[in-house]
Image 1 (cartoon, helix red, strand yellow):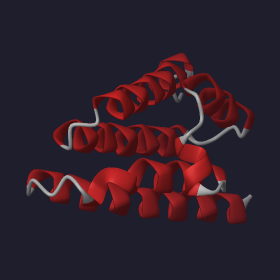
Image 2 (image 1 turned 180 degrees about the horizontal axis):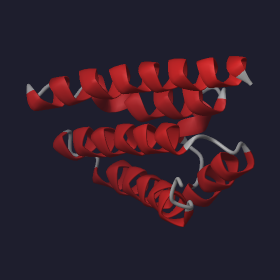
Image 3 (image 1 turned 60 degrees about the vertical axis):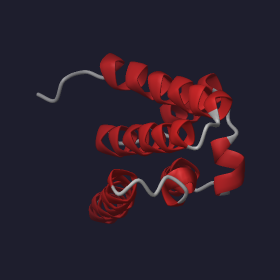
Length: 119
């Protein structure tokens, strides 16, 4: 159990750092760099190839997170990463991919809303 807790905490730390850097770059109007953040975050959280992970349909992404019983904090950070990437894509004019990323983020938000409150 301790190993699992350590792994989750390390994963949260890595994802948090990814999101922070991407937000900084986005704030500096450097839309190009945060573009691949979501793929990296999803891949890291689910131990998948980032290119494959970023192409998952919102429903498939949701299913993988549900099946993996992923910690809500990890899901929340991945959702944030996807939203940052969507904003970056919008700035770059790739509205279709941005919309797809927003749909992925919405799917993860529904998972978070369905989770029982910690008690």
